Amino acid sequence: MPRFKKLANKQPQNVLNRRRILIIDDDPLVRASTIRIFNRGGYYVQAAASANEGLERTMCDYFDCALIDLKLPDMDGMEIVRNVRELRQNMAVLIITGYGTAETSAEAKRLGVADYIHKPFEPEKLVSAVEHAIR
Image (cartoon, rainbow, N blue to C red; front, side, top):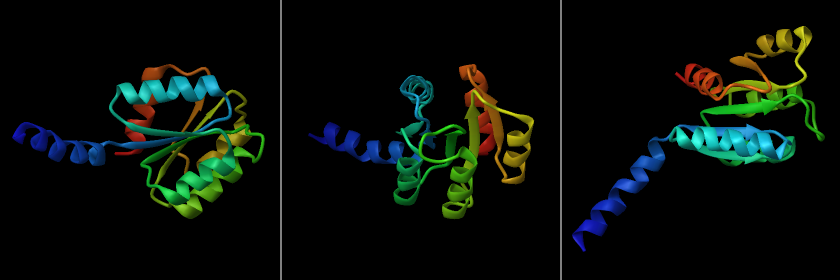
């Protein structure tokens, strides 16, 4: 019996110490692969398929970092960034996109986006960018 008690006491601390990532992307393959990448690294990961779902999760939970797609069906990615910044000023934000332009990259910098990553991305580069952003 003491062995189970010892394990139970350790588990919540481990969960609380994990870095928390929110992925907002409408592509199920991108969500699934990104979740897998960060789960392997020991992160706590939540994903949203729409901007509204992502904003709802941002309001209800704490995240260290949000990975936001620029092209979502219900809201422009930059608008999501503005809303996330309003809700959680200290949360790191990274843009992941297959449709990046110099204009959106410049706007992202003005909004304080930590990094602007083009799809398809290399898992190591994405993890490195997130780790750098949340330091």
